[in-house]
Structure formats: structure tokens, C-alpha cells
Length: 88
Image (cartoon, rainbow, N blue to C red; front, side):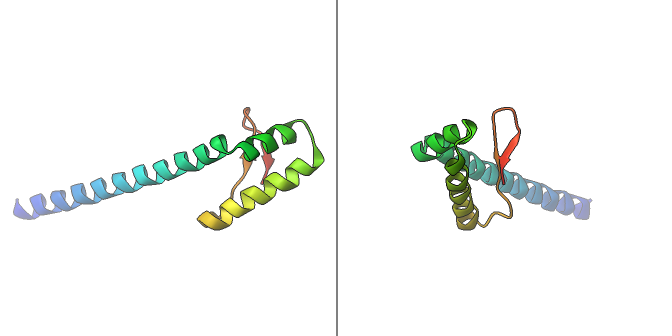
């Protein structure tokens, strides 16, 4: 019974730690999203991209590349409101 109790306590501690890690990961992703929403130049580039302005794609791609490098993401992509990928 003591071994079972110790094992259960360890599993609960692991589960709590993992839940905290997932919550922290989610907060970071939400902060990333807010960066784009609150960044006026990104918003303007997005609007220009969706209007089909040629230079907007290159500028937005550069901004995404910088974020990818700064945060060490493996991949970053831009999707429109319908979920269609516009840039990667």
C-alpha cells in the first residue's frame, strides 16, 4: 500500500508539472498572437498582402522569419481568417 501511495504521489506530481508546462506554452503562444495583433506594421502588411500587393508578401515573410529565429521556432506560417495558408 505504501509503494502504491508513493507511486500515485509521483504520478500526480508529474501530471501537475506537465499541466503547468502546457499552460506556460499556451501563454507564450497567446502572447505571440497578441504581438501580431498589436503590431501596426504587421496589421498593415497583412491588409496589403490580402489585397494582393506584391511587396507586402516579402516584407511580411521577413517579419515572420525574424520571429521564427528569435523564438527558435521550427516553422512559422501566416493564415488568413478562413485558415488558408498565405505565407510560410
